[in-house]
Length: 391
Image 1 (cartoon, rainbow, N blue to C red):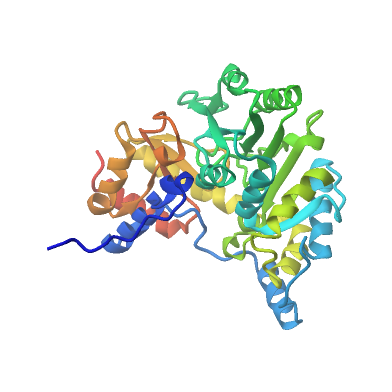
Image 2 (image 1 turned 60 degrees about the vertical axis):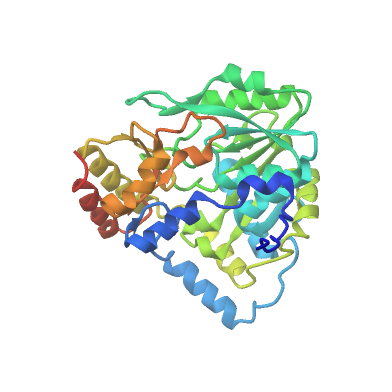
């Protein structure tokens, strides 16, 4: 009997590696096993009441149709004021600020606007998973510089070989995609690291796309330093951030990009054919909240959650690399992280993500990422479950 005809595979070759993600696999395992899901990188509580009430008011006040293509004026002005108030970076709200469908769209629009076939984009691995897909969509190639663990007790738990960055630059390099504070390691790039990135960018006339979505989620009194504040960098940096992370409203998908008018015009040209616009009633709410971003940030609560999870994992004998920022803690499990994570839901009723999915190299094979942006009772439940199978 002849086999039935199979549907042809019509997916373009450059996207073949992005069909099925470990996140879908782990989420399915969480549902199937009733596991506590510490793989998902979003809070399980709502944002501050001020921003929620402002969104409800905006809906009731008729902000329910298409906003302007570059974002409503009050939000663009609020973003501009935020950047100047905190970092001394002055951006024209009309030509140098662009509101996007979350930071992910801003990154996608920036990469596809500024790099194309034959170009190379520098990534620091481990990298946020959308970066590789975005570079592939642009038809460009990614070149990775690896963040290495510096040691168990150090001021800077992760760092990169500065000479490795210099060696990665070729005549085809167009962009450096920088994420600080960094997902998934939770490290904050130090002054020396930022200085070298800036030096390389200026020397080779490169654009830096700076993903700074965790700018308000630094722990232990650390302060965020945008790379655009370094000499020679404002004119070559697209700085990206997000209300989702700052105010714990990840489902709203309100992000933005700031930079010189020429770069923002390029990003806007691509962005207008992606979502065009989004989040009509959410944009006024974010504008209200940004004026009080420092006060409304959940950083104090997240630091407590970080300490609860990291201290608990360490007490279980796990090798935890305590993060300086973000939602995530990395653990060296001492063996293949993919196997570990696939076994963990059944063995312990807990879901984590193997860090190897954020690498091109095998440097992350032993690492696993746990999300601590969950209620304390959820984290305690996970630790209790892990205690039963650890030791």
